[in-house]
Length: 455
Image (cartoon, rainbow, N blue to C red; front, side, top):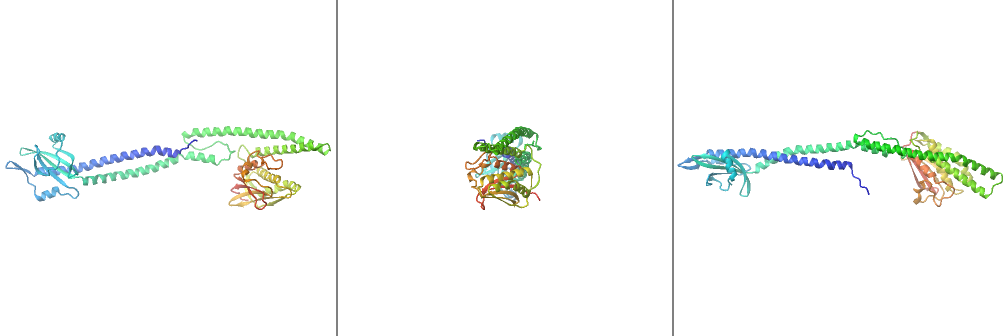
């Protein structure tokens, strides 16, 4: 079983992962930029604290002292968000002043300190991450390492602010891009939809080439479809012409045979066998007429239609079929209303003639047939109901097949009448349904036509 996939979904599956990767890459870049900016800004603040502490170191009586007044200590070491620490070490690691828990730089950082005089690194104090700035100074012949550290509360807050500030426009851009992609896919696939709609609204006999403005990539598909339609048109035209020509060629000898048999019977030279031959000849003539009607009902191109009044069509049928109904003692009645549709008069007469003929064949002597037309629910309709045996529900679709005759069907029908009715209904944008007549008890065949015209 062939599975179908949506071209729209396929395109989205290709485009959305790429957009997601770009969004993640943008988020990573934004985080890197935000973290770098926050680190650089607050590292400079730590370096200033280390410089301030270095400025307060003095040598007194050969000993180093940090003369930091309480007010100055409060200014340097007080922060609204973070805890600030400091420490002063000699090169041998001896603590002169400050927090002994502050970690010293690693050996590689010591070499950096020797060339640049400062370094920045991360550490942990009291199980809390801190950022440290290390400064090397030579004061009074003493090599000192001055450390300034702070927790990372405001750094993280600044990173988040910068990150959100950068990500929000990116998210908006991603949403706009998604909408643009969806609109682009919908617009790009519009020719496919147009192509599908043109094919969907066509009747089975409309095999004209498609004329849709499609992109270059789809032009080949449209060309191949038009080629297929052309080949189908040639094939169906050949079939229709064969049926029509064969029927035309058969009509003359059949008519001559029927005339000769009738003349022989009238002259008194006939017998029961001749009567059978006459019956078979009439049946063959009827079959040929039906084949011609079917060929007319399947035109190679759409027919030129005009406004047709179904009431007038029914009245014309009455003149043709009343004598046959009277001969069979069948009450052929009419319940007509003025209803105009756009259609072909000859084909509609053929449609109604086949419906009445079908009803006459299946209605017993003394029965009743009613032909009606009208408009309901914005739909024009034409119906024929009878008092015959009706059509079993299981056969209501099969009776529209060509040459199908129900085993219980009486008479010498060809099995083409209802097939012709359905084909003509399709030619007029309508359809045929079979039900049960509530009034007469037999079959009710209704033909519905879309969009009735104004009378």
